Length: 403
Image (cartoon, rainbow, N blue to C red; front, side, top):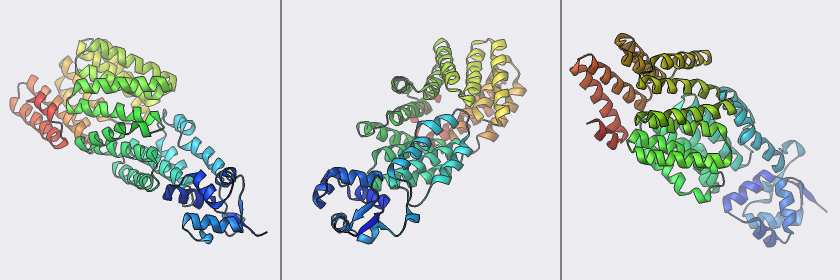
């Protein structure tokens, strides 16, 4: 009896493209459901000629598209691919490399696994991961391109998880580019479709990021509500790294609201989770954010101790971030070292040149510095530059708070 080597990758993709249920296909071609399952998992790699012809007719393709010419064309079975995907796309490898910020290494590993004949769901997840690697390295246009490819694949096969992550990545890209309204709309779309998304972490991340968007927008009540909801989801999932990030977001919000006791509590909680997750960058950043709290409260000894320790950590990681310079400048301003504050803000602008929202925040701090130095003209100019950026971003409520 003639048999053929089955192209299980084409079979899986074709089922996804046509939106067919496995049980329906099995009944339609006259095989047991377990037989179709064995083909799809790679447990059975060959197919009888009569079944091949029936399957090709059902899937509206040629028999040749469903078969491989020889064993050298065989790729990993679905089960083997699932193991690889679990290591790369899911918890293991991602959790190992994320806390230490080894994004170039993760990007290299992902690219080395990508092949044209991988199943489309796997390809979509890998493109999403490449997008994450890119925006984590401030390569915003690359991140946008990878997210767009993931979204295209997700739409093609109707994979809601891939679509949701792609939209979340694009929302972050829009945020970094200063397109706040577009970012908020995409995150809200992801959250509105949460019942269709299997991965609760994707929903929690959208809530946490949307909370930060609303803080920039100026809606502090909604920002706090969403960050707390994200924390509740992350707590249920027992994800210390993500809990650290979400509590950090809450701490930064409470700092801006001048509720310093709540801010310190949230940031200390974030620090605990960062320690549990060995989140290296977070451990250093949180010390700087705590320094901001203590500096605003007038405890400059504690502020400078935390600040110096945090900045040293960033120096060892060879990282520079505009927010760190803004906080250092604010502490210097509050201490009365205005020349130092001005120099630090200039350095911050150098780091933030591609990120409008960060520039606006630095300009607000510049405005406060010029006010205290009695230079009302420069203070107004800096404030107006910030307002122009916020208006362009669509942060109308924040503009109202500034005017």
